[in-house]
Length: 413
Image (cartoon, rainbow, N blue to C red; front, top):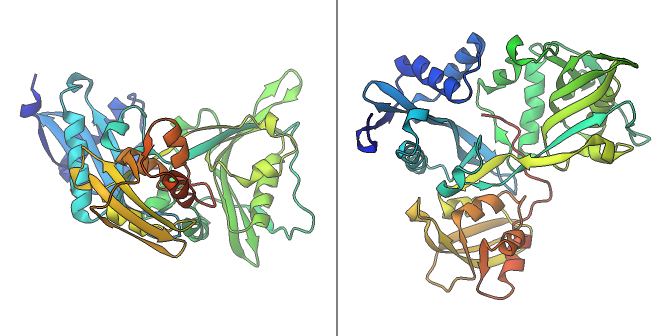
């Protein structure tokens, strides 16, 4: 077999897509994928940002990036390379194929002017060495709706909730999503075509549940929120035992959100509501009668990497005034290594190279973890991942890097 030096890495050609995609499917378990999924992925693939690794005529690795824009603290929407489709053939592990692809993707992101890169990690242990830090969490819950009730505050002007075919209300739902993007760090502005991803619904992936269903909340004919979900009817010795699985929910105001949750809690013959990939500060947690019976848990979600430290730290705002010098370690992207002075406040920020003495020492991985405001510098320092050289600098920077709302990356890619 070929060695690392014999492996050729090149930009994906359109005529190679089917082989590339088949390799990816095999790497992630080899399950059956629908023609609809294949065609959607092909239409969304940015061929100039997609890579194929070859050992002779054998395809041995895939990777790519999407050109996204991510909301950062303060509401700015920053160009972000959405790293995706990463696979290496089991026959070519530990030969440098993954490293060469990660190197090329970050070089390309820098050349395109993306201050950030982000990804979802199928194996979290992999990406820290390339400078990605776990920046967002997601909330998972399984609610016993037969025993847990939902209390909507009195005086709430609830909108109308109605069933709708998911495709029929897609433009209105996308308008709701777009309006929410600037409100929460981590959210991605959807590029044209990405709205169709939410409606891909192959029967092979339903696990016996219904086709995708949708309800919308409306006021004066305008959609103010939506929920997409599936139902699966079950029967036990005591009677019905159905499950609702929530795929997506978004709303413009608390009343619309509460109305959607109330609907989901009250579907006939259903006794369990499952949800995954929700923000950790999701509002329903403060409306339920018994949070313990909701079995909430969190897990890692989005990983963030600063491609350009100066541009990235200048793009966001800070909760409190901050003036701190970071000594940044970044062996994989050496252009980031060295000292950076960050000055900022709730109105704006600047981050420039400096020869001044460092106040804090950390790697670019830790900067990625704290960048969206969901991870504390103090917590990382307690784990030995951040060193304080100037007394008081750690507390100052930790507070400033916070976010009023939990960061969340709901847009899969």
